[in-house]
Image 1: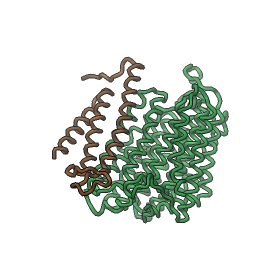
Image 2: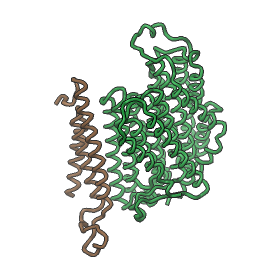
Image 3: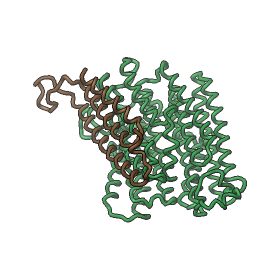
Length: 487
Length: 106
């Protein structure tokens, strides 16, 4: 069982190394495609088995090199980590299928980079100490730096992304140093409750939390996200949305729940940041004029929802945040896959030049409609269950202003999704668009983009109608975070 | 106290450089910031204990804490990789567009 814990980290790394050793020409490559989908699916299976085991009370763990606790690189597959690995690996596979459709996988480096990134993501989710968290987050970020530089705006597009994340990583490392200096350990299990016991340790962990807030794109540290995600190819945008900020939020949730144990003296600040993130994100999304820009600005708003669950600092809040995270990542990946399809078909995603796609591409319109309703939170989609959970958790802890914000932001979300629907799928194409000349779309939606978009949208429906398994898993994960099953 | 001053100097200079225009200054700034933070992490293990932290060598004075040294070793490798990537970006950017602001206004 403990060998299985190593699969999500080791297998993608080895696969990436083997792929890099091979000599290959630019262009589509069958082995790359097989490895790009096969390896993440293998990790999905491993994570599912580990999740089933930890839900039965048998949490698997592994320590590299046989060193004692506190020194070894320890990985523990608790329910939070398993859910995260399951989700991110599935989305990695989906985004690489989309990359085949958008021809982004003609870049020989794409699949090895993505595999290294997914190994870093899995490691960051499974690790039990702050320093290894830093290392795995870097393993995840370095390939993403390269992916941004390979994107459509060239090397310049990645500068903001690289510098902001590098600064955050530096702050993170400083925080880890301060934590070690004040407490003498970086193991999360030993740090449980350290914030309440020692104000100096609380400040040190606070530095780590600020760095994680940058990685999660919480307002006011969010402004790197929309620009950077707009600079990458459409399939890489699907990948980034599924992986990067989610790791930030999950790590934030873990450190917060374990070290601060939901300290009410600090929780109000986190809640305020969460509500601000929701509101600022959704307002900047409504004002944007292209599909991708609306969706990426929206990401910030949804990060706010996740942080609300974290900031409520109750087991119900954590469970709601975890459920929300899983369903939202699926929904957002579906929407970005639709956006990728539109970009390939039309050669642009500017709302002013699109229209009438609903008649031409009915299946794409269905995928968008289901995913958009999921994002808004209309039954029977998964978004409804997630927002209901979150609202119930907020009401139970008496945070009525948070509840009001959750509902109000949902309404503005509906407005922004209607804007996309009206701009892309309803009505007819503006006359001026045809005469523009600059548009160079292929005129059809590749099946490799349409199928993942539909599949992810169906997942959103399934998670809404048959939410019970994910609800049970997220509640168990929250209980583990609160009680501390990680050893 | 000396390490505190050195860390403060490195971090202050690094921050100032990172906030300047021009990618080259930003890269140098990150190198300095990285050094500052590495020193900070080393200090977290205590700078007064300097004995060898090797198994079987206990009893020869206070043993240095090996964990922060291992941390810094890892962090140095990561910082080196990212610095090389940034320098690559800088060079590629200069080759691609002439009006690159790597030199920037002084």
